[in-house]
Image 1 (cartoon, helix red, strand yellow):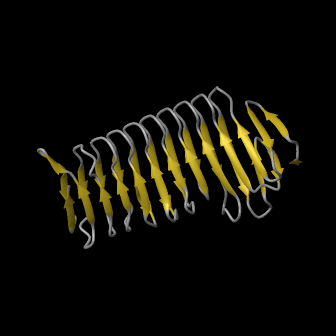
Image 2 (tube, one colour):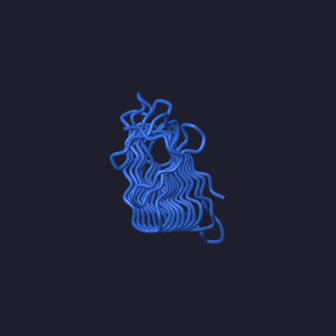
Image 3 (cartoon, one colour):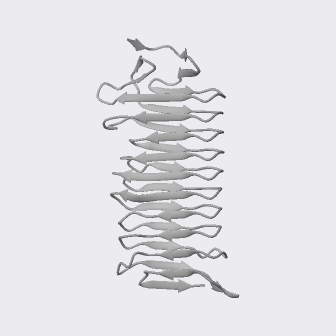
Length: 236
């Protein structure tokens, strides 16, 4: 069954189609469980046993509560998605092109096989995993003490720790990693990485030992970052 209504209420979830092909899925303030499966060949998506057609883009909003939101497809083709967990300790997963925002709370974000995908933790102590075929992925822990892990991604990544004391693992390719504020622990792993921790706070950084690894770090007024595994180190 295909649905073409402008707005449809499914349990605690509201679905609205604005422009043709652009859908919004809105949770409420309770703990929502939202599972969306996309068929990119037929340009449909299914939720709670209902199928909606002509999809080009889906925006999912968890709003309040500790939500579980999973948006998946066997391949993305021309369909993209965005997920915003909103308030609460959310678990968010996307496996094709798009972006994930945790929002306030201690969130777990899984982004994989996403072309130029983005993952942002928001405020709170978040876990962010970037894996698979995420080409030119971008991750930002934003506020809080975050854990960001791209060690199982097959392409380079761009990572910002944001404020807080973060632990960051790059990929095995040429990453760019910014510790930003806080006392961070950063592991570049393989590839020719560039790591920036010149932020006025103590950080511990390991580049992985590749020939062209480069680190920009602190050395002033008795503050010296712990640095190892870099060919090029620039203090300032």
